[in-house]
Amino acid sequence: SHLDALESEAVHVFREVAGEFERPVILFSGGKDSIVMLHLALKAFTPAPVPFALLHVDTGHNFPEVIDYRDRVVAEHGLRLHVASVQEFIDRGELRERPDGTRNPLQTVPLLRAISDHRFDAVFGGGRRDEEKARAKERVFSLRDEFGAWNPRRQRPELWQLYNGRHAPGEHVRVFPLSNWTELDVWQYIARENIELPAIYYAHKREVFQRSGMWLAPGEWGGPKDGERLERRLVRYRTVGDMSCTGAVDSDADTIEKVITEIAASRLTERGATRADDKLSEAAMEDRKREGYF
Image 1 (tube, rainbow, N blue to C red):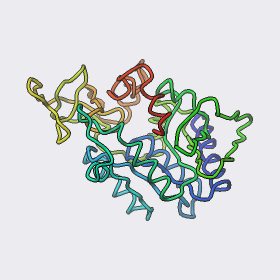
Image 2: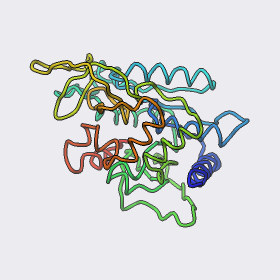
Image 3: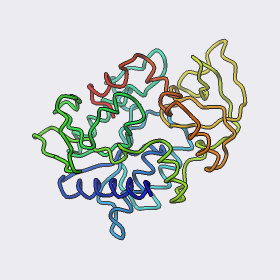
């Protein structure tokens, strides 16, 4: 099936990176794409352990269910986990809180510092081309300069699945094994492989409030404000990020079969529908990528 082809391509990418690079790392947030990416890495090297560490950029405003899931997976598979904490950078005065309370755009500095400190030369990300127009420009191997910045003009051709990982000292390569997957592909693969996800991906009763047309979860990040009323609704999350910018959607899809049916009928990607940080401007994602963002 097409899922076999996508899986084969991703496994090839993981093995290619293992052969070309010295210190790769997998970005792992506990979201569905990074979970599928880890599942593929486990498949690529079984029965040997995954030869890469995991890196999580922790905003401090994460969903508790996702952090619990992350820690369970790390313990279950005996993985190495590095955590880059946004809160620590704020406490040291290296970053400043934003007026809107969101910390998602603040992840870039801790991410680049972790890459530099640990000398990671390849960084796996779960980005897909169907998510957002800036990500549609990415190659599977995306070269980043010594400042971690992305320049679309430096993207290399990738004919016949031949990947060029050459980079100068100080540069690194972001690697996207799921580039050619769609959101529907991801969910169909999760169903086929029976992959466990955090419960927030399925419909559940939750207290939320509305802001800018999105249902946000209350938390220490600063919501709800005066005039924003909490409601208990049946919702689920299509994507997982900072609680301050990740919206829930009204849904009764409490099983994976219902989620797949819902996604197949949707005309918006998960980022387009539920990520406030991508709606700051037409070029919000591309601007952040040029600064070193995921």
